[in-house]
Structures are given as structure tokens and as C-alpha cells.
Amino acid sequence: MVIIGAGQGGLAVAANLGLMGVDALILEKSERVGDGWRKRYHSLVLHDPVWADHLPYLPFPSSWPIFSAKDKIADWFEFYAEVMELNVWTNAEMYDSSYDEASGVWTLKVRTADGERILHPQDVILATGAAAEVNLPDIPGRDSFEGISYHSSAHVSGADWSGKKAVVIGAGNSAHDIAQDLYEAGADITMVQRSSTHIISQEHGIPAIFGANFTETGPPTEYADLLASATPWPQVLEFAVEGTRQTAVKDAELLASLEAVGFQLNDGPDGTGLLGFALQKGGGYYINVGCSQLIAEKKVKLAAGAGLAQFVPTGVTLDDGRELEADVVVLATGYKNMRETGRRLFGDDVADRCPDVLGIGEDGEIGGLYRRTGAPGFWFMAGPLAWVRIYSKHLALQIVAMQKGVIAR
Image 1 (cartoon, one colour):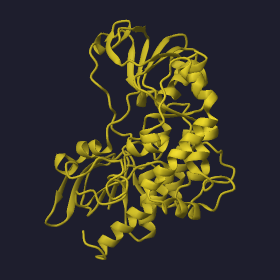
Image 2 (tube, helix red, strand yellow):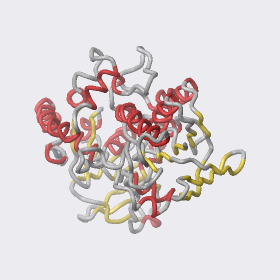
Image 3 (cartoon, one colour):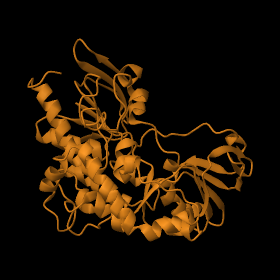
Image 4 (cartoon, one colour):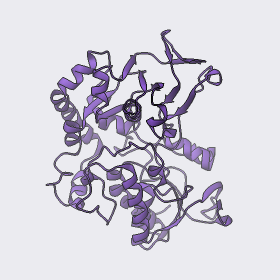
């Protein structure tokens, strides 16, 4: 079988399939395993604690930091692929595909450093992640802007903009991280908050989300995973309401300081906080690691309650008429649904059979992920490290059962 993408999802499901006796090939378009993390902005650090982030069968060393820098994660992924003896082709990009329903076999055309290869797997797992398809709106006047503009996924370092005027459009995790990076590099930075954002502190919010299972004194990972996965997602969201309320009480001073400068807050879909947003769309929140204080102290300027109307030669105009001068504009405008990555790579026929990825379906499970998609022989694999460690085994078991004839395709 073939897996597209050597991020945490692709590696985790390949490791499980390998231990179940299924030969899996991972196609990774980058030069090295881990480049999906390695090539992101320099200041990126995981917000999830180390006890929730182990990959299957190979936990991090006990000396590992609680919150991992992106380069450590990237290098660990490369090590993981080697020690787990995963079959990975780097510099390999699938550019054409077709599925024969009569034979139940895919034809994949792949460009590699050694030339074109044609593969014929029964199953394909799209594991490019939920943040693979950039959402870059068509904004009038962008060609007239005399500065530089780019999507947040292309941000490398704030040091490039020391002493310059910078505008970040958006107020989610990436927007806050990049705004903080730009401020610390010496840029004059303004954040444009188009709609309200859910804010939690790392100190109080992370323990509320992960509970007593994923802590230094918690149970072994395999038991913690069983406890976590034993609770249906709708019930998880019910529990999240109280956790969100308690976190807001503990974070009251932080939240009040943000509201005092006009920052717009919310408590998540139906009061479910970060978990509700993560399950609904994978964004809309920020785990504070310092930028909230910068906003409250007006070190990062705020333009709240307005969207980007157009670019002008000297900066941007918001839809309420405000004009912001800028040398650089970072569009932290998020990502399209992973289903659209499937559409780009596999075509409308495959994508139209699949549900949107994320959201909770009528059956109480996450939409699209870790199970049948509606398109034969086609699967989605994505999510944070804690999710992919648990659900990669679920997905692998289904594929093995089908290949061995235990369950029908």
C-alpha cells in the first residue's frame, strides 16, 4: 500500500502496518523526513506536552523537553523512520492517479530523483495533514503593494523585518506566534483580528485539555491512550464545557487584560473551547505562550473587528476604512479542508465521495479520518501527535482486515 506524506500521521500508520505484516511505501515530496516541521518558522514550538506526543512503539527519551522545538521533532521523525525500518521515498511526488473499481487497484504515477515510477497499490492513505492546503483569499490590489506579502506557512523568521512595519492578518495560533516573532525581532507589528478568538494559557489550559492521563505522573502511554479513546467524542465535548469554564476562571486576569484593549474573545463552539474548535476546523484558538501579554501591553498593536478589504501600495485597507502602513503583510488566513487536498491530488470523483475532514458525524466519530471515506481504497490520516498515535492503529487494523478478507471492502 502507499502512504502520501511522511509527517506524524504517515509515519505512525506505516509503523503499525509494518508490525501487522503489511508492506507500506511512504511518498514524501520533501528532501528529508521531517521537513514538514523542519522548514517552518524558526520560533515554532509544540504546544502539546511531551507525554501526549510519543509516536507509536518508540517514546521520546526521558530527558526530552516538555514542549518540543520543531527541529527536534523533525530530527526525531527522521530517526523514527530509520529505526522502525519504514520504507520512505523522499523527493517523491505523486502527480497522477486513477482507480480501477473492477480490479480494486490504484495506478499512481510518481516523480522521483531517479525518474518516473508507476505504482499499483490496493489502498492509498492521504497523510499530508490537515494544514496542507493553503487558504489564500484573492484580495484586491495585492499586485500594487510595494512591500512583501505571503501566507503564514511561508514565514521563516522575524529577523528579516527588524525595524520595519509588519501586519499580520488573523488571530489564531500561527498569527500570534508570528506576531510575537516579529515583535521580538524588532518589527513594528499590528495584528488584524477579523473575528473573535478562543484564548487559553499554556499554564492552565493544557492541563484542562489533557487531564491527569498525559502528565509526568500519569499512567504509561498505552494505558493513557486506552482511557482517552474509551470516551466517545460527543461526551468528550460535553466534559470540555466545564474544563473551558474552569480554565477561563483561572485565566481571568489574562482574558480581562485582552478585553481591555479591544481583543475579541469567545469560549468555543457551544462553550467547548479549544477542543470544540480543534474538532470542528483545527483553528480559531490560541494557546498563550507570550503574545497575549504583548497585545495587552500594546507592544503588539491590535486592529480588531475588521477584515482585510484591499492592498494599497503602502499597506492595507480594512473593511471599516482603517489604513495600515506595512513593509510586510503576513496572511495567517488558515487552510482549506483536507478533502480539498484529496481533490487536488486525486480528482473530483474521489473527493466528492468523501466527507469533509473533521467535525463530529452522526455516528459520533471524527469526520473522514481513520475510517472508510466513501471512496474505495482511499483513506485520510491526520491530526496532532496524540490523535495519530491512537488512531493509526485503528486505521491499520481496518486495512489489514480488508486485505485478509475478514471484512468486506
